[in-house]
Length: 395
Image 1 (cartoon, helix red, strand yellow):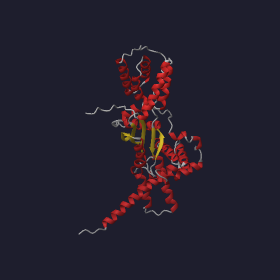
Image 2: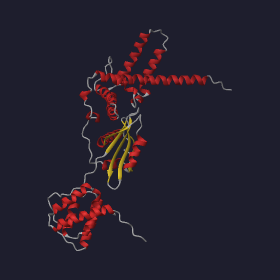
Image 3: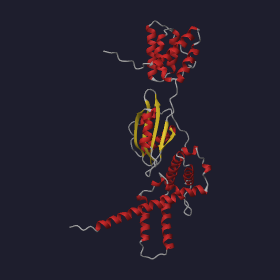
């Protein structure tokens, strides 16, 4: 029966590297170099090639002397990973078994060898769809485990809609992003991982405010990313386009009316139940038995539209669409549409103020007209279908 291979078996290249490091440690010890100088030598190697850590710790058992034990003790004082600490303890135990004795004296000096900091997470965000939902992905390399990946769908009205944690290799993660998530109409763009985590926490808070439970595994992400924070309270786009660049720029605000022609904004509309009352008013005006001149009919339509504008776009609703425009401006910028991004941000900044009934925000005005028109067309299609059905003669 063959013996089970050790978990950490160095290949030939690693073995040669270890031999080189061990030889330098032996030379340093034979020259009676201070322990901190030996630590500096080891630190240089492990900073460049952190995967060697466990291999080197195990190989140090081949230099059975008190100086080696002191080196291992210093390494353990700084180690944070359980696997590293266990490996050091095993090697120290082997040294004791071989008769090595050393004085374990506490020291106030900061050890030279420090473990590498965890890698910063990478993030990816999609555009926002008609419901206010978007895809959010956060990925971080984990030693010996590949990539720790959080996949979520968040909604600015409902919080976290979907959530799961997965493990990927770097290659399979790239294929997942390009093949499964990003499309031409709804691109997924690279975003700072810390900002994505900030958005995920926002969605989690909203989920709890709505008295809904957080998804299973959410706290695993909190633990994994506990060292990551995002301190800027403003949407990410303002790090690329300053508010002063788009505020009070009439041409940019005017251009925001045309944003409804591009994806994903082309899919945006108000909910049917929100505009139903005003769509009915338009229908009544169109079918009125009272003969109205075209200008009179147009004036009646405008009265209905402006009533809808005033009643629908409360401060809460304005700020909702403001945030959607800000987040979308970042996606537009990252996909090479800088002019569209500035137009979206200009409309967003304008929404800091109540809507003017005389010269309303062009983006919001077209959003309202489009939403009412969608409902009117839907009603007409239903009526046409009903007429076709009524012409069918049943036996």
